[in-house]
Image (cartoon, rainbow over all chains, first blue to last red; front, side, top):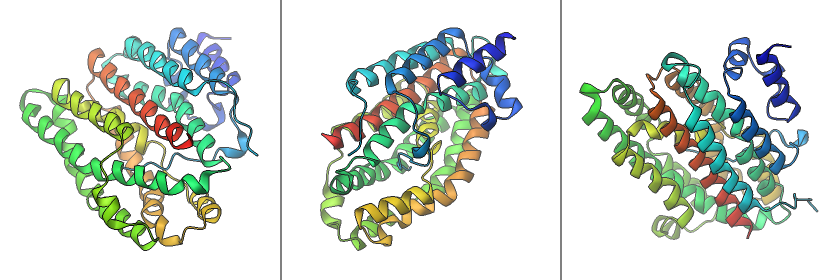
Length: 64
Length: 251
């Protein structure tokens, strides 16, 4: 598994991204994220708890 | 009854600052200026989970219908601050633009976006008045400390750092526009009339286009590390500020 694939898998396993919802170009950008950044994003997700699939349509509803 | 995570939200929001610092510190480290904006947008998007989780807690709270008018007050405060804030950034960016390509792009984007967002505070005020809220009280209510912190931070960065900082604020607020399905659910749960949601529905329809414009603008920003870090810091402060509004409304 490449370095980029390892990063994507870590983010996906943590519930931070769904690879199916990202284009190849976006995936290439995700692969530029540093290991430190992935570490803090994963820790943040862990503190938030698992994402709720049935609440994905809920938005903050703040507007400019 | 909605089961909420037992962890401390205050602690989680503090942790968001750490996340922002790490990402701001390493922004542009691998991508270089050409891709820095696009990479920055991606990182902000991935971190939006904290705001979405705060939003999910609030909108799923059993007492949400009772708290909804307070949310609308906060929303009106924020919206009424938006165009003056963008105008301040536009004016500062215009002053710098002759010798600063980033400021020139910032000014060009804001000049157009101010037009797009003008009068939305009046539309929202009309919606809320038609829904039975007190127009005069909304007009004369001073912004809360949370809104002042959120907007005030942007004025500070516009004046004392770079007006492009506002892209972080806009990326968070416009990067996650309302969805009609969710607005309809809120209407049913609160019993508020459809008129209360007209401005929000308008944003649900138009903000996808605004989002694409913003995303493409940020992707082509000529960012050096310090400027990318500033926009990142602004975005994370905005996420934290908006999440704090939800947390305080629940208290």
